[in-house]
Image 1 (cartoon, rainbow, N blue to C red):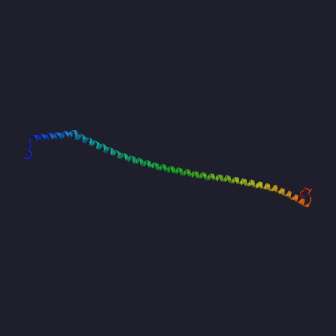
Image 2 (cartoon, rainbow, N blue to C red):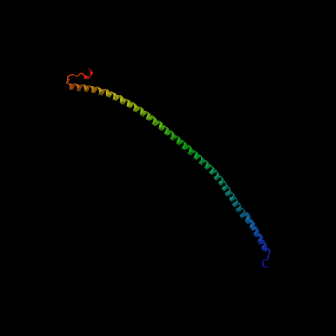
Image 3 (tube, rainbow, N blue to C red):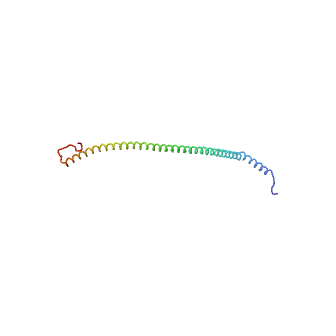
Length: 150
């Protein structure tokens, strides 16, 4: 017989089973327990991270919407300010043009009035010169009477 079963072999098998049982109690179960706890922690962290990631993306999209709305509102404010500035510019230009036209009309009126006064003065001097020339030509040097006034 190749394999004889005797008491030593039975004791050896029983001691081996006791050894495996003790190893299981002292090493395998605690290590398995730690591995299982670690797996649960990692799984929980992963789930929590996934949930947080979803929340962050929803918050981020909310902020993006708020930024878009703020940009749109800012653009409207700028457009309104530009339109108001153009309106103020055109009304200011119209006011300045009106004032300039009034000043131009007043200046033209003054110039015309001065021209008429100068023409009257010159007409008087022309009449005096005409009388002087007439008197010189006629030989009445001492006579300073006006020829045209008789």
